[in-house]
Amino acid sequence: MKPRFTDVVSPSTEPVILTGGLAAQGGIIRRQLRRTLAGLACSVAAIGLSGCASNDGGGQTAATTDTQTVSTTTESAASGATVEAGAYDGADVKEVPVGILHSLSGTMAISEVSVKDATMLAIDEINAKGGVLGKKIVPVVEDGASDWPTFKTKAEKLLTQDKVAAVFGCWTSVSRKTVLPVFEKYDGLLWYPVQYEGMETSPNIFYTGATTNQQIAPAVTWLIKTKGLKKFFLVGSDYVFPRTANAEIKAQLKAEGGALVGEEYTPLGHREYSTLVDKIKAAKPDVVFNTLNGDSNVEFFKQLKAVGLTSKELPTLSVSIAEPEIAAIGADKLAGHWAAWNYFQTTATPENKKFVASYKAKYPKTPVTADPMEAGYTGVYLWKAAVEKAKSFDVDKVKAAADGISFQAPGGLVKIDGKTQHIWKTVRIGEVQPNGQFKEVWSTGKPIKPDPYLDSYPWGKGLKDKLMTT
Image (cartoon, rainbow, N blue to C red; front, top):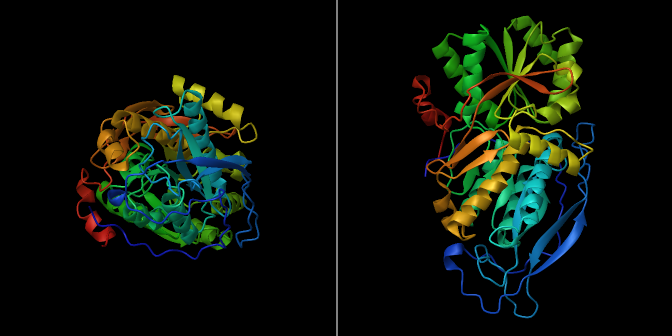
C-alpha cells in the first residue's frame, strides 16, 4: 500500500453527538478472527432522528436536516450473539445495516446534508426493488458534526458496534484521512463521494468522486489554453485538500505557461474576507482558482461583489461549489463564474432526468442536485452491484468483485478501476446561470481513467514524493 499524506488538522468545532439507537454491545472482532455464529438472531430498532442545528463558533447557525429513520443492529438477548461485519450472508438475516457518516451540523452541513439525502434516496430505491441479495438495507445515520475527532469516533461505532457492511460518507479530505486508519484497522469499507486532491489509495476506500486528473488538472488547462487566463490567484481553506491541490496546480502552471500571483488560505468556517479580497484586487490576477469549502464561500463571494469584482471583472473557477452552495450563496453573486465537476443538475441523460425527478419528489424543500450528491447516490448502486457479483457482503469478496463494474449513473457511464478503487468519470466545466443552474461550457465527452498520483503527466512526476509522507 502506498504511503499517505500526513495532514495537520485545523482546529475543530464543538462536536454535536448524534446516536442512532441502541448499539450492539459485542467486542471489537476482526474479520479474519470472526467465529461461527450459532443461533444468530438480529433485531433492528428504528427511531426517528432529527439533524440538529449547531452554532459553529462563527456567529452563524448551520443548516439542519429533515427527520430521518435510522436503525442499528442490537445484541440478541436470547443468544448473546452479536451480528459481525461480513456475517450478513446467512439466510436467516433479513436486513443488512450500512452507515451514513456526514456533517449534519457545523460549517460543512451546507454541503453534506444533501449528500446524505441522495444516499438515502438510493437506499430507498434499492429497498423498493427487493434490497440487496434479498435483504433490506437499513441505514445507520451519524453526524460527523464538521469535527474530525467526531468522524473517527462515529466510524469506530459504525464498524465495531453497528457492524455495518459498508459506510457511505465524509466530504473534506481531513475527515476522510481521519477515518482511513479506522477502516483499515477493522477492515471496513468506505465509499467516499467527493472530489479530492488525489495522492491516495486505500484498500478500504472506494473513491466515487473525482480525483485530480478528473477535475483540477483539466480545469487548469482549460483556463490557460482555451480561455487565455494565465495569472492565477489561489484561494483555499486551510487543510489538506486545498494545500495539496494548489501544490499540484503550481507545478502545472510552471509546465503549461501559467503564473502564480497570489496564494492565501483561511480556516474552515472563516467569514471575514475583506482583507483577502483587497490582496486579490491588488495582485490583478486573470482568474481566481477557488478551493474554499463550506459556508466560507458565502462571505467570500459576497465581499468580492461588494468591491466590484464580478465574474466580468475577475472570473473564478471553483471546485467545491455546486448547486446547493449556489442556492446558499445566491446566484446573483455567482452568475458568470465557473465550476469544474463531473455532473450538473442540467446534465442531459435519461438517468439524470429520473434522478432529478425522484430527488425533488423526496426532498421538495431542497430540490437541487449536485455532483457530490450524484456520486453518493452512485456509490450505493456500485456497492450493490459488487455485492451481487460477489454473492456476499464480505468486504474482501466485494473488493475482489468490484473491478470493471460499470453503471449508467445520472452523470453518464462510470466504471470501477479495481487497481486504484477510483472510478472512470466524464469531466465537465459549467458556468453559473442567473437561475442558479450550470450551463455546461466544456467536457471531455467520455469517461476519463482515474490517475490519483498524476503519473500520466510529465509535470506530475515526483510530486507524490513531495506531497506524501509515511
